[in-house]
Amino acid sequence: MEFNTKLLHGRAVKKYADGATLPQISQVSAFQYDSAREQDEVFHHKAAGYAYSRVANPTVAAFEQRINEMEGGNAAIACSSGMFAITLSLLNMLCAGDEIVAGGGLYGGSIDLLEDLTKFDITTRYAAHMTPEEIEPLINDRTRVIYGEVISNPSLEVTDIRAVADLAHAHGLVFIADSTTATPFLINPIALGADIVVHSTTKYINGSGNSIGGVIIDSARFPWDFDKYRALDGYRNFGKLAYTVRLRTDIWENMGGCMAPMTAFLNVIGLETLGLRMERICDNAARLAEALNELPDVTVNHPSLPDSPGHELAKKQFGGRGGGILTFRVGSKERAYAVIDHLRYAVRATSLGDTRTLVIHPESTLYIRSTDDQRRIAGVYDDLIRVSVGIEDAQDLIEDFTEAVSAAG
Image (tube, rainbow, N blue to C red; front, side, top):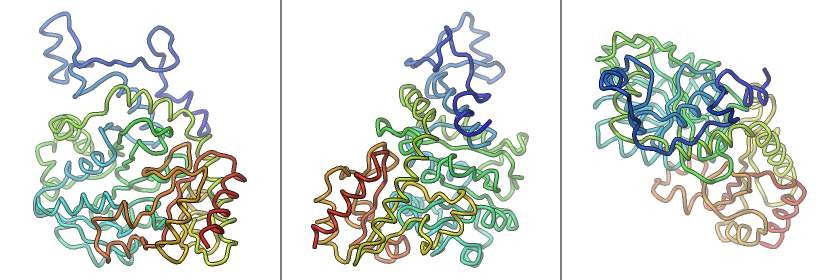
């Protein structure tokens, strides 16, 4: 099946109760059983069933199965937020003393998280660019994971998934790809060698800006060295499934960051139109980038533009599409504010992946806790504007932004 057909008719799309075309919302905390023995078997994972919605819920399971199929994984675990998904994807395999190598162009919240992990003696070393040449010198005998964004936000650097995965595996390391800004519409990182994929479902997967969530997808292909990955030592018997089993039955369950059933339901609805929305969003972003690129005193970055650093990789990995985010610089912070304030259709708001076009000044918002070096590596400058392009008519967006730039002087 092609992408949009699979969203609606894939193996994970089941015959739901009472002939419903969508899963029911199981808005309950606990589930009853006919006998103590039956409950015992479910609690000990000897029988299928649900005990408590923090541990498993039918609506959440329906979403997990559908996003897992779209990413080509072995199992998916839904979380209360994208940040919690990133946190658990790392803590599930790391212990004190372990190290991470990460791309320097990460989302500001991810940088803040990695800084927090230093208090647990988990250190991150940053590569200015997510390339094998810059990653490899940072690897040492304590490194356990390479973490990066498929399309970094907001620097829009495109990661060569195959090359980074090959490097990671040559050193016996796990590669986690944050594919929030790419989505399975543009790429399946697991198919190119990534071991684990994470998403903030709040963004493009949900698509309507109505709920917070995250998801972790495990490929179950990584050959775990349990002496090296001490956090998984008690799960040796599960082999390549050790990561999923520990995540599901241990750290995710115990930390309590489960996705709410209503959120899962809204994500299922959003997922069904992901292909249509992404096609429109990517086309709008490319057209807006071209229009802004023709203006004087404006520097535009979008992977669809031939002079973008990520252009060739975008052609190779995304079929030429550049995603839904673009950035542009206008010369000064004051002018950036003036442009943003003059916009009529773009919404001044954080987040991305909405049906509406969203605009933000990253330096004064998303990166307020970052150092000057971290901002520079992330491509964040005081005159930079980030645009998450929506599904409006492209010509209206072009007129809105070009008029705003002109009005800003």
